[in-house]
Image (cartoon, rainbow, N blue to C red):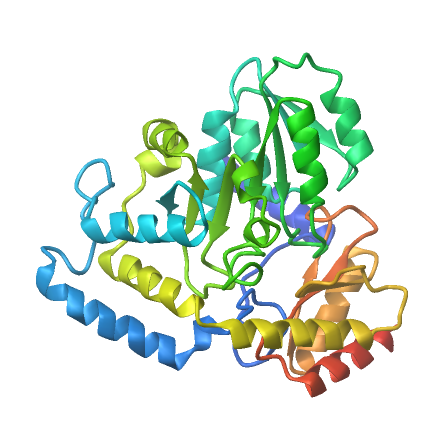
Amino acid sequence: MMTSHLKILTDQLQERQQNGLIRALSSVNLLIDFCSNDYLGLAKNEKLSTKIEADFNLLKSNMTAINGSTGSRLISGQSMPVEQFEKKCAEFHQAEAALLFASGYDANVGLLSSITQKDQVVFCDQLLHASLIDGIRLGKAERKIFKHNDLVDLENLLKSYPLETVKWIVVESLYSMDGDKAPLRDLVELKNKYNAEIILDEAHAGGIYGPHGNGLAVEMGIEKEIFARVITFGKAWGNAGAVVLGPQTLIDFLINFARPFIYSTAPSPHHISSLSTTLEFLKLQDEPRKKLHENIDFFTQHIYSVLWGKSESAIQTYYISGNLHVKKAAKILQEKGFAVKAIVYPTVPKGEERIRITLSCLTKKEDILTLINHLESYE
């Protein structure tokens, strides 16, 4: 017999099912990859895998615990390898300091929930990732949303507050759903004009842009103008975890006030070792980065339909309005051997449901052409 508690959950799942919103786990491992964020192919790189294992084996003799971290970093999980990785990561990204989190979600929630405080204002781009939105919601600052990449709208909001009001501008260097870039140089001008600071999520730019993959802010030479950057390791790095980059004072503050950091178990020794190895390996991936950008150029040169989004990045979108319609299209493509996923409302605005396509340095040109042909001939 179903209890009243289970019935509430069941009814909500059924409602979501009826509206074409139900989520389910499915594997696409045997299909041609057009949906993962493994932009440089490092998650599949055998040389990197071998190097990770070899480096970890060298470290084992100096470790008191080799399988688990034994606790949070404020209790028993602190170690020299994690300190060394954070230092190297900060240097690589041309930041003063870095703090490691378990994931990009944890990093964004920990950062924004703690630094956005009472009597302050957060200015949020309309298309921010859910992790940024959740972090801001948990903070105590006033929240103002500006139209996506709309500098006029943002400036109108900024100038409505006194200059002395503490203001945060939260953006992504490369947006995960549309694949477009933030106008970072213009944002720097606005933040200086109105006494604000920028929080920048570099999730989809880290590893791909910048000298040797250290991000779009570094590529543009504005990293010193950004108060905090978040670099995640589950995308171009082919790993997991994330760091917040910024002044040492910010890092000290997060150690004391960021709850996802304080109350989470530290990463395992093997994870730390693998990140350190990947960091050094990433610096040498200029050829895969070049190949990725060649694939992006090839893709954008061969699309013709007006249903394609406007992106010059590894993230491409093909709009098919309606949750049920876009899910049907994704299923057909999967049956043809392509790993693609439908992005549905409410993750994206109603009417802007789409097939989200991600490219990598491993993507074959013949597969690109075949996928484009299938989508542009879909009715």
